[in-house]
Length: 194
Image (cartoon, rainbow, N blue to C red):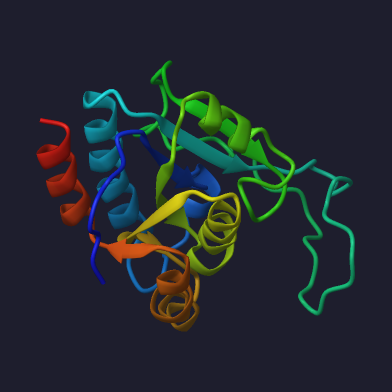
């Protein structure tokens, strides 16, 4: 696991660090730890004039906009609590940030994320968030397919299942980009943006 470089135009893309998911414990690391590390990265990206993209997932309270198709996993049967889909206050409130609302796992599918990144001439994204094997992995796959350089801050993501997290980090992410720690990304930011 090594992050070798950051492109001149790199964006931080934060997946689903919102109230509902942050209330869960997270595995293998607590969601609060993921949030704290992501906040430091977001602050550093903003300080260097680089885009921060905050992605949230939402759904109609009655589930009417749920993705169709048969699955073996049970579907949600009750409305989520109010405010579950609001971005964590520690990240919110920066008018220069890009906000993306999705209704699927990937932040690219059914959104204008690709257009908003390309208009900013972004060629690389750094990913953090919840859940590693779902929203983060789906977004990483789509970013790779769209031709972005993908960097994954593995210590700034977590899952509901430690084995699923480990599988994504060890088996999938090396095929999509470079995986490292937030400290590696901070060091590269300091070196390349000085």
